[in-house]
Image 1 (cartoon, rainbow, N blue to C red):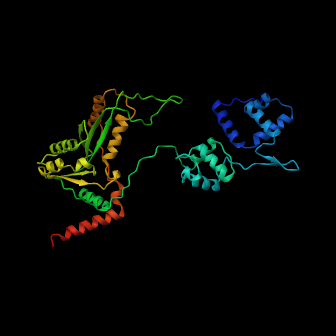
Image 2: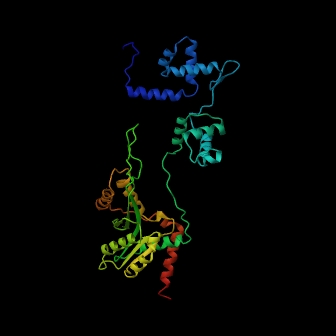
Image 3: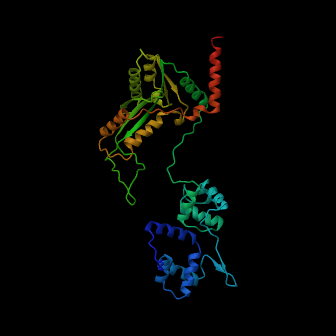
Length: 370
C-alpha cells in the first residue's frame, strides 16, 4: 500500500466537507484554533491556509483577543467559558421569534410596517440578548417554514345576507337541469402598462420591462360556464353598463333559446350590473336572470381564477407596445387555452351555508302543500 496521505477528493465533495466543517466550528472553536496557532508562531497566511478561512478572520480574532472583546471568556483557572451557541434554533428561540413575527414591527417601536431579517435580529438582541447575523436569521425563518413572498389583498366579506346569497347560488348549481346554465361573470382591466411580477431571471441580472409613454386601457367582461369551463367575453374601451349589456348579448346568442330556457348569471354588486339600462334590457330577455354575490367576497367568483390566468399568460411582464396587440393576445388566450373547469369555492360548503341550503329546500318542498 502507498504510504502517501495525499488524496484525490472530487471538488464537489471538498466543498460539501468544507460547508460541514464551517457549520460545526461556528461560534468560538475557530477562534480557539486561530489563537493557538498564533501562539505557536504561525503567520496569518499559514493559518488561513491550514484552517480554510480568510486572513481577515485571523486579524479580527487576534484584535478581539487583545481588546478582551471575544464572544467567549476565560475563567480564573484559564478554562474557556464558551458563549451561548446561536446557530441552532432552540424551542425557546422559536417561541420568541414567532412572537415577533406575529406582531407588527411598530408594536416594538420600529418605524416600518414589515419585518426584515436585520430588524428581527436587532429586536431579538434587545429581547433576549442574543446576537445573530442576517444570514442566520434567514436560515431560522426557513426552518420555521416562513418564506418571503407577496401579500394579497383581501376584502371585508361582511355582507349581512352572505349565507343566504351563497346558499342560493349553491342551490341553483346543485339543481341545474339540462335546459339551464349557470355562469359567473366579472370585468377585467387590460392595461398597456405591464403588470409587473415574478419570473425566472439570471442571478445578478434583473429583467427590465419598458413602460409605455402613456397608459392605455381596454376592459373585458367575461362569463364562465362552471360545468363546461368555457368563457364567453366582450371587450370595450370603457367600463360602463354598455360593456355589461354587450356581454349579456353574447351570452344570449351563445346559449340559444332552443336549447336553454333559463340562464343564471352570477355577478358582483358593481353599479354597472344594476343600471337602469341593464334592468330594461333584462326585462326584454327574461330567460336571463342575474344572481348577486355577497358584497366584498371575490373568493365566491371562480372566474377570478381564470382572470388570474390571463395575467399570468398575457399581461404580466409583457412587452407589447400597442394596446390592440395586447388585446389580441388576451383573445387568443381565450381561444386556444382552457377549458377552465374550476369547482365552487369551499366557502359555499361552510356549515352555515349548508344549513341555509337545507332550509331553502325545506321551504321549497312545503310550497305545493300550501
